[in-house]
Image 1 (cartoon, rainbow, N blue to C red):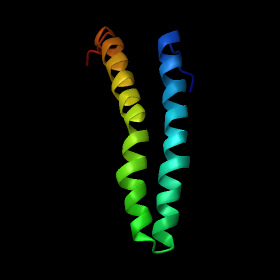
Image 2 (image 1 turned 180 degrees about the vertical axis):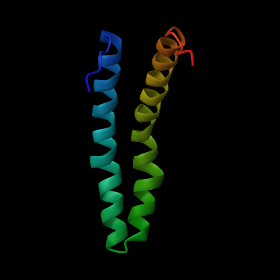
Image 3 (image 1 turned 135 degrees about the vertical axis):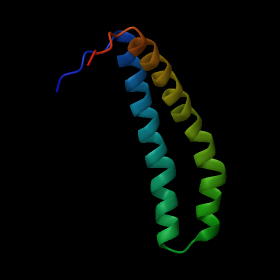
Amino acid sequence: MTTHLTTKEKILAAKFTDDRKNLVARGLVPATTALRTHDIKEALRISNIIIRLIYQPVRNGIKAITVVYSITTTFLPVAQF
């Protein structure tokens, strides 16, 4: 399946991908590791401090992509059945 993204969509998608990779690498993986080793204090520290900080760009990316998507799909013709 091929998709055709605008330049703006490509930029937003690339930024979101980078931000999400950062969240996974610096937040989710260490938190999961801490939980697996039963280090609850470290898991809570990661969750309450690190993940909260580095999730914000991911959230902003989701919102931006959603806005662009809703604008582009608003003008698409609707199939008539």
